[in-house]
Length: 617
Image (cartoon, rainbow, N blue to C red; front, top):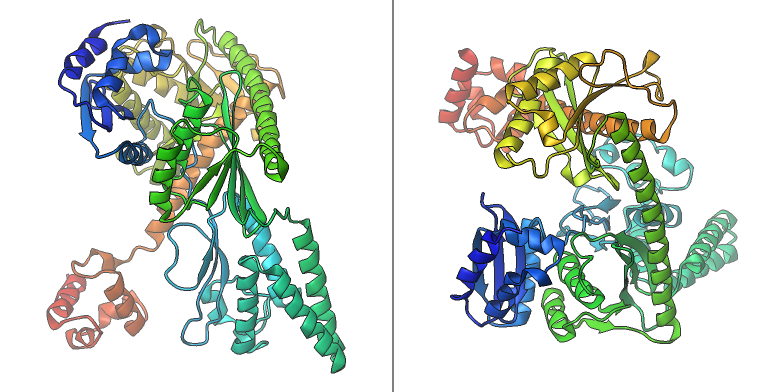
């Protein structure tokens, strides 16, 4: 290994403080490589100068390091907190990655709105709403949807949008199948509907037994007054509630607000299994495969995981673990700062809690076995593909491109990445085509390929981090464009160990009949019909198509809601809404006089003159 990186760090270590803090390592082009924390910055960074004691990943990082920044903190706990926040925000190349950046769902019941709009039940992602009730977030979107379905059946709360609610003249289908009490058309009074909301809130707060007692009382009262239809309805609600609460995994009284976390390391693979419990009920599972963590000891891996995972997620009161983190007291201090309250860490050894940990470990072990089996199969298929393409190197990365447009309008392109473990979704890219807005897929593909590999050539001229296979969705024409781009950029694919190919749809566009073309061979490669290889290539091609068309639809939808008013300086969303509400359409605004325009709320006489002049011109 070159000593350049080590020599650089040795020179810097001499001037580092012997205090707690965070250090950041950068590459030659300013790329952030790694963020770490230390109780003693000088001692910790000095360890990177001992090449023999470093793992392969860390040796590579040290080799690339050309800049070092340190930030002192008052304590090791503060350093751990800062390290976690920086990793989560900056996503350094060599730090642990959890692949869980999507926001977790919550259940929201909105507050009553003036004008008689009844509260709405819905799934919610993002920041907690200011009004109403919010429960979660939960790790499993499937569990949230199942809960929403149950709440509809038992409490008959509306799930429709406010616009749909206001437009109703008669009950919708959900009223007739007993999933909504139809407050929109007065089938239930807002006072009675509010009672339904309060019951749902109590249920989500874990007070199911209290709700059961309330429903039972209503059923008995209805029977006494001989309102047998109401009694039957309450009976059905009671049965449904009893069935679902009994099927929940009810935990002991001591486990009201708990995350059970089992971290398992096996055969160069780390998996984390999380069981979440709220109000004594199981509310969801989550499995994560952290990257860049396999060489750490289990206790160190658990510490790294807890500090990163809970950087932006609500913390429960208790964490039950199968491995205690290395610096337990520091981790607790950091987690309590984030929660703003007490956080308990424990590794149960006996009893029901220990059984739950064993179950989580069992699930993690099964997931590792499944993942390893899928990885072996994927590696075999990639090896078959390498043989087919006459590649001497192992395929670790495939990049596939597709373009999407409507008669040349809103042209976009996608790049998706596949590797030894399947699709690498967090590395897919979307491109807005800049040079063409007429129907010319070849020109669009040429622009995107030139941008992608022109930049890659500039950033990695030595061939590092290049894909082994570059594939375009299309036939011989698209392949010709790909070859021409490499020739224009003076890139010899064989010198970089890269194979170029195109995937074309089969006869009558049937799946399983796809054809693979490579340069200098007029006939497609012989790929077995319905083989694992053709299935893999279909998945890659379909994913590139999905990303491209999704981005195109998004741009097209944004374009459809544009208005000529958007081009007038000083007209924002509020003033545009006021103008359209007052006049009804842009056509009527064009006909309006300056006096008429000035009568609209928020439109001054000066702005009215400006609007009038815009349309007059």
